[in-house]
Image 1 (cartoon, rainbow, N blue to C red):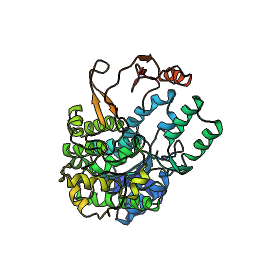
Image 2 (cartoon, rainbow, N blue to C red):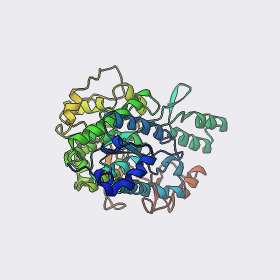
Image 3 (cartoon, one colour):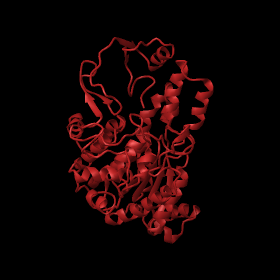
Image 4 (cartoon, one colour):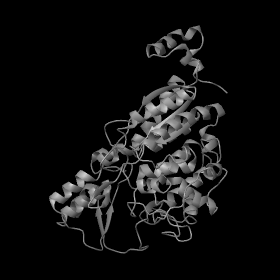
Length: 443
């Protein structure tokens, strides 16, 4: 096995390189070990990522205790929640590519042997995974964790409740004081948005696809178990380096099928489709809309998660998290059980080794009595989108709707019409020329 870091630190010609490492406190013993990059997307742009530098320290401890030398670095992350609804959203999707590119550059420039990737906000998760796939060095992803729900009058709140409260206030159905109370309560701590939005969806997928440790997706950001999970990820990455198991051995077509199964069973974000297609492209796996539809039609929707349902990620965590769902899918033959994972074991071996007690709960339905008999990430084709469009049906009962089209050329114009009460019941709102190139972009 080639150890790339030796290109940087071995031989008399590399004395200047070693001198620079020693300026940062490394010893000859540290330099004799394999180097593992510990990348995080920590910043003060978003609560999703504000705690990631602290988690990186735990990952570094794990790497060190496992006998390797950690090297921490960071990259950007855009807050979709704060960039949303204005020109800043044009920066969102491109940030995924910048994240992937910057991680690749750091690893290639410094010849790290393996990679731990820690991410929290929407595009930072797939961006980090894409870099791992592209670099194809032993890599383990770990999520920064979900935010705790806000509690107001006994009801769990997420940031979407704040958006809905704005609409209720504009419609005259909510007072300014009530709006302020919801604003002050909905987001109580660090962590990513609590419902099954993009971050929690991609974290769930990271387990199903095998690039993250089992059970790593659901513990909240400020739970002590999150620190332990990140430490264990550092240890696991060092072990993965010893085994020389690389992302392309994990990210197989069958693993992507498992990830699509997870996406549909949890009622996940439609952005999951966008990101899985990009990740598949990095490893040369040919994934198509037809694959998403084929798997969706045989996957039951099991998890009653916000925004289409009633529960947040913290609730799912309390009953066993993503492994609880994966076990149900495995038992019914809905997973490719022999897919390799970052533990060095198959997904079936991982799940069999985990004891998850069956609790009385209504968050995850039995497969025999699902919320919907088929998955919720639906691909549509028609005159508006002949090459395909994506909708999420987790919170929708109707399958057909006819109404008068109200067409807008910008999202902002549609918002204005809604706030002024200009949209009548039965109207169909169509916003043209949006998406990755449109204004104000997409989340």
